[in-house]
Length: 204
Image 1 (cartoon, rainbow, N blue to C red):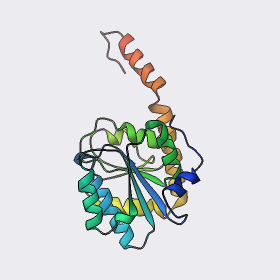
Image 2: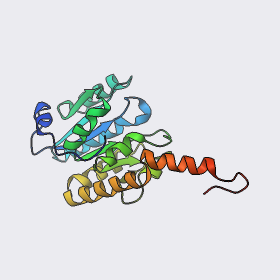
Image 3: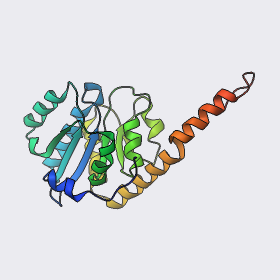
Image 4: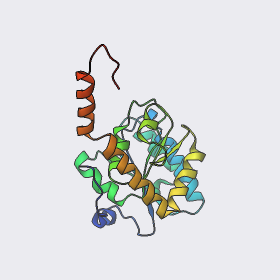
């Protein structure tokens, strides 16, 4: 399901996004440990620098009201679009119009399947050095920043926004990493190998 798609221009038009605006996307539950407040604050930094940005947030959760209040407090409510609940089958269309995906988690996630889904779509990702995320986003396949660091997050966003070739390079590398390491077929083979190995010998 999660593969690169041609940009869905009708979706972009429906969201009232101009051609000269760059698109940042996060798709996750709207809860505090996902760290979305830091992404919103980072987007505010970019807007203060004069960059044309729209930040799409897909998902539902108890923190949505707080996040909406924050966007108004920062004066960037017009640049943030809360998409609400989006079905998995529809997410690739949203990734198709995004210039990058951001996952600013501050909690110790064990894997980060949403990150892998974005990478599988060929979208460059920015995330944080917490939990198992660095196992997904290896060096060269995405950008990692410290958690709770809006300045580093804004700098990483700006780096990708201003370098189309780098976005393409990282997006392609991220997709290759997912296909080579995290497909369901590969996961099943690893589990099968683990279960079938001799118990008296260590498994690889």
